[in-house]
Amino acid sequence: MRDPKLSQALPELVRDGLISADQAERIKARYATVDEQSSNRMLLVFAVLGSLLVGLGIILIIAHNWDDLSRGTRTVIAFLPVLLGQGLVLYTLRKKADVSAWREGSAVLLACGLCAAVALISQIYHISGNLEGYLFTCSLLILPLLYLPGSFTVALGYLGMITWYAWTVRFEGSGPDDRPWYFIALLAAAVPFYGGEMRRNGTGVPFWWLSLCMALATGIGSQLFYRDWELAHALGVVALAAAFTLVPWLHVGRELRTWPWVLVGGATMLITFLIFSFRPVWRDEWHLDANAVNDRYIIGLYLATGVIGYAWSLRVRRPFQQWPYPEGLVLFALCFIVGLSAPTVAAILVNLALLVLGVITVKHGIERHSLRRMNLGLAILSVTILLRFFDTDMSFVLRGLVFIGIGCGFLYMNMRMVRERQRHAS
Amino acid sequence: MPRKLLLFVAAGVIQLGVLAWMIVGHERVLQEGAVYRFRTAPIDPRDPFRGEYVVLNFEVERGRWPMYGNANTVAPSMHAFGLLGTDSAGFARIVSFAEERPEAGDFIPVEYLSWTPDTLFGVALPFDRYYLEEGDGPKTEQLMAPQWNGEALQQPLPSYAVVRIHQGEAVIEDLMVGDRSIHEWLKEPLLDAPMQQTAPTPISVPAGS
Image 1 (tube, chains in turn orange, cyan):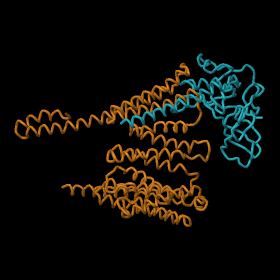
Image 2 (cartoon, rainbow over the protein chains, first blue to last red; image 1 turned 90 degrees about the vertical axis):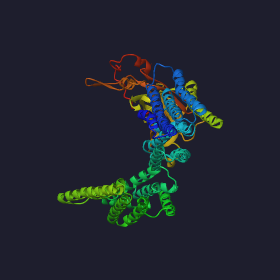
Image 3 (cartoon, rainbow over the protein chains, first blue to last red; image 1 turned 180 degrees about the vertical axis):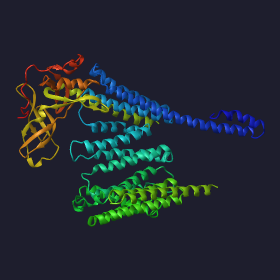
């Protein structure tokens, strides 16, 4: 029982005739269930943490490289953590398939054991190669654990590992033209797991984290296929970001924690807009040769994803409904076209677009009585204005007045919102 | 449930199989491969997962060779096969290059880094690191790097890697300093790195033909 006072209070309440014996039993059962759920969650957390610590410990001990041991002994040792992990996973599948603490714990231990084994074999045979080869082999080996026994923690590690792999291929690869093509297959292999978790635990907190990792892996990975960086590439980034912010509209009427897609897409879009709100970014001549754009197929693919996604979303979403980020693609495309002939006008348009996005976000915040969203809108407006200090020749007095004005605006809007909430509550 | 069990058993066998395959392939090279000695010098980095190792900077990688095949096909990071031979002192050198995998002889896959239409210079061998016990990297570097003694730069004892080559696969068997295994050196307390008594001939002779 969670509260010891309850166990003392219930007999007294029955004795005083305030509740019946049956009601007392039901209250007891109710708190016993809550208590059991809580202890299950604790068990899960400790199982994951414990396995992770043991697994990482094995990797670190192996990294020491015991020179006194013979090659044969070290080869046998390489298999021990793997066999231990496999034994635990087998036991879990046979006896504890429904206990998430066992599923997660055994899978994490096996994943660490596999990574340690590959590391030890690399040591024994002095296998060359950059980190990318190691990460690729380990990713392939731990992939089955997403499905058998089905581990959420391993899935997060897997997504992190394949993103790291793609990054190393792109930036530390042997050739300037290396692209992480295998990343696409590795990411696709995790999609059925994501779908399964969506069906089973789509409203839970773990799914929120899984969505965040999936969105980050997809977002970062997708940007590692460019050969170059020109103005048109920003269009690809914004198009994909817009598509991300439309993900929750794929499941209208069904509550799922897919908000991280909007978070990643929205943040990417705002950062891109803020960068392109500076005039010099548009004025770089080499940026503006639209006919000589490398990667036109990749940019075209991202653009098509954004445009088709937006067009499709119009069936279930009104323009600017909920959040204005999908419309950011249209605004940025407009700025891009203008920027090809008039860079200064494009910079002004981006600033106007940021102001539109900010005002609409503030409006949504006020309508929904959401302090967080209203302050995000105010932050967009403020940062847009503050950044103009860097490319305008403005006196210190005027800058000071702008700072004071923005600060007062924040205070006024927040106080107004709090008062409104209090009025609604009373 | 039995289906899941069977699937996991299959996945487990594949996991073990991949690890075993990595071992068997390298073990075969060590057992059956021809021995080559590659002159080298080390630097001491560290890997986040695999521990401490020295990167081996092979002299053979700095040679110049006539361009092979059709010069028009040359592009950055081109891969080729280097056919191996030995010089008069018995150390490995790359005799020639081939675009296709050779049918006979000892060879290794290489990447060449720089070229002109008629000359190829700078290759990367498929092996470049030697793993050591934690803490042995700096000691190895001290053993194998030149040291200042007052104003005179003393050259270290000549060092080389013993590499087994078998059907294009290569595995480093040992790292030798002055004809002694690095592991023997590391067992002794290292007060002063052993140096050559007389000034050595500068190693500037191209490793290639």
